[in-house]
Length: 331
Image 1: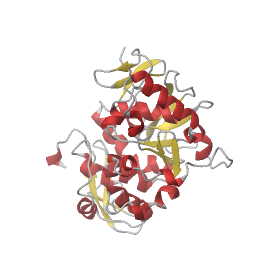
Image 2: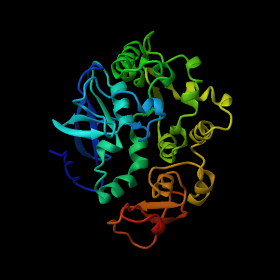
Image 3: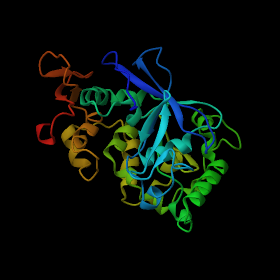
Image 4: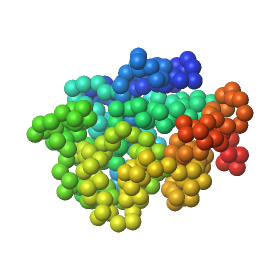
């Protein structure tokens, strides 16, 4: 039986995903619940930022489970349990959940592929209008950069050997302490990974940095933590190495995060980040709307008076309808 999302109760409703605790070999499972946003009743949560595509071919070859029961090799996806129902997720998201899952406590996340019914264009349009607020109200953004350096898996031929290596890395790494690191607790085991491990080719040249939605998510976040396999870095750890990254997209993205209070028009943003990528053509515009200084975005069914609204400083905003039923030529 296919998974069915419960309908949203109103335009300010969101869903949150509770990832149950477990060991690396355990079944991936959790629960999705809806709530009114923003509301005192809405629980605290973290926002998972990730790319739908794997960071590398080597990363895409990593196993998603120890057995074929949960891992579909045909489309390289994994089936997890949500509300006791099967739910299929892409390869890179499955790797992310395997690594960020705590062995001791459940964690609450907002994850697009789980919390939005992506097959419903109306819901998708409505939820993406809330994206700037969803990111901003999260306790922190957890940015998944992919598994450990893929080179260490190249000499391993069998999926079993690769799985065991991932499991050993997870067991020995800082990633097991992610909930405590997010809460800014201190202690010998709760510090982030040493900065000397940041400057690897696979990390610096990761396609994650060239995503338009990465810009949106990092620039709207309160705090950011970067995760790669067993490693966890605070944003100041990554930022401290920025000058050594040259002109790669990672530098441009980190600079955007650093200067996020500086606002630009949508037209200026489209020119500034024209080389960035998105899985959908509509998102070449929609992903930048939440960073613009001159756009007021609403879903198709929004009732409005006139064609503009007023910003806090009294400047008129141009109105844009976020509508995933449109073609790129209609935006």
